[in-house]
Image 1: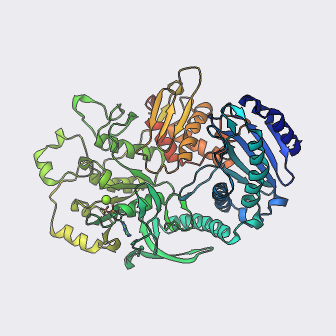
Image 2: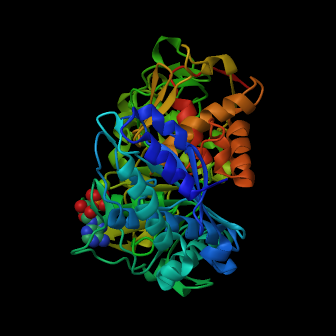
Image 3: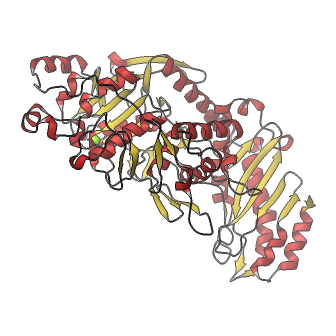
Amino acid sequence: MKDKTRLESILRSIDGRGYKAYKDIQGVYDFGSFILYIDHVQGDPFAAPSRIRVLMPQEVAGFPATLYSSRPRRKGLEDYLTRQLAKNIARFVKGNRGTGKSGQISVISTGQEMLNRTSVIINSTGIEARLSMGLPAQGRRVLAGQAADMFFIELPRLVERSLVYRNLDGEGLEKQVNLAEDQWVLRRKIEEMGLVAFVANGSILPRRSGVDDRPLQRGAVPFVSPPELEVEVGLPHAGRVKGMGIPRGITLIVGGGYHGKSTLLRAIERGVYDHIPGDGREFVVTVEDAVKIRAEDGRRVEKVDISPFISNLPGGVSTGAFSTDNASGSTSQATNIMEALEVGTSLLLLDEDTSATNFMIRDARMQALVHKDSEPITPFIDRVVDLYQQLGVSTIIVVGGSGDYFDVAHRVIMMDRFTPKDVTKRAKEIALEFATHRRREAAGLPICITHRCPIPQSFEIEGRKQKIKSRGLDNIQYGYTNLELDDVEQLVDANQTRAIGDIIRYAVKNYVDGKATLREIVWKVHRDIEERGLDIISPFKGLHPGDYAQPRPQEIAAAINRLRILEVRQNT
Ligand code: ADP
Ligand code: MG
């Protein structure tokens, strides 16, 4: 390790030289209160910024051990410190100091979710922050004076204000850490109580806009549980919390258009993740393996057994091992369900807004006109009970348009001006009063899940460079293939998408052997991450992976399933 004055003198010696001269500063420097690792120096001012790490010993940082004594608390703390770094970068870093990315310091972006991230790592010995830094240049010439300001003024100030406990808002910090623990406890408690989702009274569900995930500020109607569904849960920090508990089984959310049905479902969808204080959904919690199901026409499908929903396709196309490069609305929705069952889920979430109508329902009149022999689809209404009875998989489904579902629902929640009412009794009466006269199709037939083994060769990327690169939230460039994830709705953070790209590489290297099923593969990767940390998926040794957020096994599988070059063998 060199002294920081050494960094100063190197910088002085390369001032005005070509950008490549910056490579000389790579190394480890003692800054007194912290150690600076300059791990990777960018090749030019427009390239991906340089990667640095700051390591502060716990004697200096001074975080009480209770703040990181358990998994959920540590996650809450690391997430809080990541946000603190971002805030202080905005305050203390001047930013643009020349060409390209000159002058920038950055930490990964964050949204409303508290996720396991690689940006800050804390334990009893110390705290490590992973940052990116655009080393300043004029044209392609080193601006050493500006670089010195970044290293010796901005960085120490940033570190001092973001990573030293006594300089932080202790109350705000503790609030988030406690909340992370409460949410963890709540998610476990609802399972013990036989619930699949919980929405606390007072929650703010609507968001500011379709592109702004923060809570709606004006005119938001706070959530109030119907008395019939109200339950109370005791939490370690928040104490007693009351709200709507949705039990296992089949739950309908009905109501007029624009009354808040989809908003409620979306909050439940996101309840698989923890949320930051002030989000409005702090105590909206769902079982962690819940999967949102939607129609996704155009998607690729690789040998999925969709026969529980679809059979006898025209042209004799097999549905026991259904493959297509261009799925229809109904076949894509059936695929999404079967793939969710394959990876493992106990709760399906469906919204009529994003479902294929012919997949959801076929009424008596249509049954009379189109004979079953010429209709390949067994609608969801006829399988939702089997899913629950045979596999224990619950469903929450938004339907404003079809009362036929009253027959199969265990409970019916009506959204009325953004407030839920329990209308189960009335719906059941109506179901008796007005018979639907429809025949149940395929009732009780077994729903078999056919597991699939990905073939290693199918993942091979042509070309010299094995390139896997994520672009934003919804896209991963996998070699020459573009992996589209727009319709994977529970993928919420672009850093999760980045992680998925590298997880696929990691999975292929370690677990895809042609014999392991997709389910085994994603859960093995998940176990590795849980046991050894998210860093392990990074393909670059010696270069900090500070820009990952952890995805669920469900989203990892969803990505692999959508890879257009994927080939599998059915495990029969
Ligand atoms: P639906 O699915 O029943 O047609 P949405 O859930 O799409 O209705 O909601 C319609 C509109 O009302 C959306 O703009 C949504 O943001 C807003 N909204 C939903 N819930 C609330 C609420 N609790 N308070 C205020 N506005 C809400
Ligand atoms: Mg809707």
